[in-house]
Image (cartoon, rainbow, N blue to C red; front, side, top):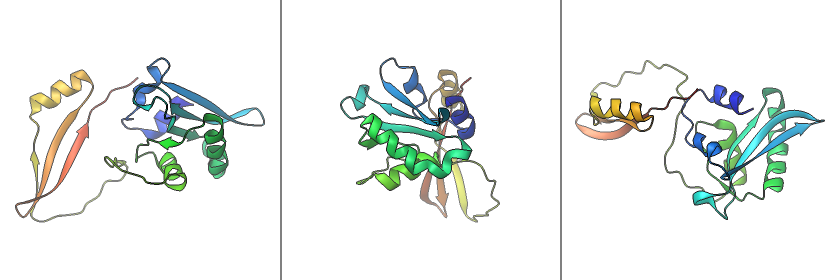
Length: 167
């Protein structure tokens, strides 16, 4: 199931390494009539000790119409009361927005699925990270580059490009 989740995400997964940390997560298989329908994962150690936190929720495409039913079952089984989700994971984000309160966003991660052709006259993209630093981040398999977006000489945004390689 995680392989399917990772394939569908088709991007860097912020908390991907949590599963490899022994004792840090619990994953729950979600079933219908004995057949796998998806899974949910909860962090239980590290910064989340004593704060069971949902961080992954995946359903097979033909089961997504039952997402709320499965998510409620995951919350009951796990006792999770917190969420830490990646905004580019639309299903888990939808669950957090529906069941959560007092939500805070540290950053928003967008999906890169559509190529746009918007022209922004006067916009300039200025590299803030050197090529050497970006290559070093790629070798470490963490981090990445940063660019500043300027519009008519005024900084209006930052673009972060994370690098990650997985098998």
